[in-house]
Structure formats: C-alpha cells, structure tokens
Image 1 (cartoon, each protein chain N blue to C red):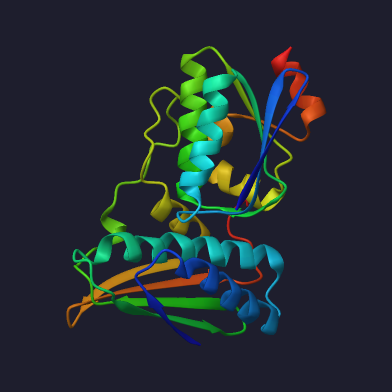
Image 2: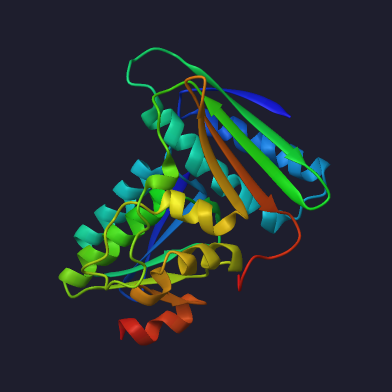
Length: 140
Length: 110
C-alpha cells in the first residue's frame, strides 16, 4: 500500500484511519496496530517537522506491506539528509531530576521494531522498518 | 483529543482521550501544566487514549519533574498494558509512580 503524505501535522489522523483499515484487513492484532501506529507517528512526525526548511507544501511517500511474519514500513522523502539512527539513545536509568526531556521518539521506534535501516539515495531519505506481527520481541 | 479534569479527594484527575501525539501534545501540555500550577496532587488516567507518542511522554516527564521540584505528587493510573509497555521501555516506570487504579493511588496522596 502506498500513501502520499503532505508535510502537515493534520495528516496524522488520516494516516491513523488508513493504517487501521490496513491492519483490520490483514488480520493484524489490535496490540500490534498500536505499535505500528506509534512507530509511524514518530517517524512521520519527524519528516513533517524537520525535513523541509521552507514554508512550501511537500509530499512524501509511505509504503506499507505485510507478509506472513512482518509488517514492513518504508518512508521516502526528498527533504534534507537526516539519519535518525545517529541520534544518541536517552539514558533510561537516570533519576527524574537528571532525566533529559528529548530523544525518546526514535529510541521507541528501535525498541518496537525488529529492524530499522536508513539510507540516503538520489537525494532522498529512505527509512525502512520491520515490525513482527505475531512474535513479541524481548520481554515485552 | 479532549481532556477531562476532575477533583476527587483533593486530587486533580486528568483524563486525556484519543491520540496523544505531536498534533495534540500542546493541548495535553496546556491541560496538564495548568493543573500542575493549581494543585500539587495530580493523577493522570490513561485508559481513554489510543496511544501516546514521545511528544506526549515529554509532557508527562515535564509534569513529573515540576511536581518533584515542588514536593508534589504525580501518579499515573489506569494504564492499559500496551501503554505501560511504552512507559517501561522509556524507563519511566522507574522515575514515575504508576498505579492500577485511583483507589490504589491514594496510598501516595495521603
């Protein structure tokens, strides 16, 4: 499935509806829909908020596929080069006073996904994410 | 997103509904921080939201930090398993109080 998304934060509700239909249609459990939509929120929001420096309207692509085991997400945008995997993980063991407020988004994506890959090809950012549909990862 | 606020046993209970994400985080922040500014006993209920993204977690952490510095109390209640797992993987279960129900959160407020 291909979804064209504009760089407008209001797009999230349309994405939620479309992904809900995709999950129901493919028999994906509700719990996994939650993880998929959370991952999409984090990565799509990043592109909407940071990929384009001008005030113009831009469009980027979200591909969603499912096979026997996994849901594969691919996000392709022609915004400025940004590799989210280079972002440092937050220190999740620090005290509440010392705990930093940012940096959680991509960390959550990495925790929920089996695979996260980034590449810059032909002046486009390509982010590929694989989420297991049935097997729970780790001790979650 | 809609935010309901109620006061019970001198505790302000905040109940967000729907999606707590980047598009709604500002409204969530306004609701939570205005409660924090008027009360130092706050409970946030999580059983009426679809999901909470990092933008929403940021607001919860801010409220926790503020209340800690004011010697106030924040307890997160009625959290479904799928939401709890996100708090846990973020390390928030170690720095914030999480309780199954309002009834059980009273031990912290009294």
